[in-house]
Image (tube, rainbow, N blue to C red; front, top):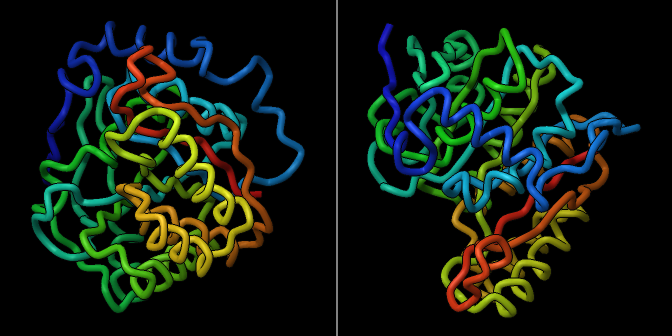
Length: 276
């Protein structure tokens, strides 16, 4: 079994276990983190959207989504995100592998990986595609600190077209119908714009996400040129959750790096959304 070693430990999050554990705890109690008892949701949550920047910037926002599902006990997390490096296959999962972090290792669900490759026209199994990518990796330590006894099914997207999103989303939903599964769509929103403009752009894009309207989502994305890096991951998560029975999205928290740090000149937007 191959070991997928961390690509961004020591950069996006601490590479030392105790420091990482402390930082994740701080993210949960941060002013932009989840409110106390916020996990007590009435409706079933089928999937979430989480950001994937450095923990000091986006960690508190991401923890809103994770806290909302913390009373669940998924046996499988399907994590889908963009392939920023553009290396490997256009749409890639992997099998026969463990992902290592400073908090230990998590096994890939090879059975589900093989099955999703058969269910999808586009998903292929390729270890190399995942070797440098942070969008999936940064989700795992927070999951490790919150849950136990789970496996992952990582899906990395170079091609994030609407066609791919529908294919991947439907394939993910078929896996989720067979196992106790939570879907995580990994994406940041607007990149490197002034804070006020980022808020405006992102609120326009979040509206169709909450409506679970994929056509409108891609329309807003293209017309406004919103620089959300994992738009295909967001869309495929929406499609999967809708197929599983979700009827709406709920924005738990939105903030930018500027809101967190105070430097509002050039920011990145982060949103925590759940689908119920």
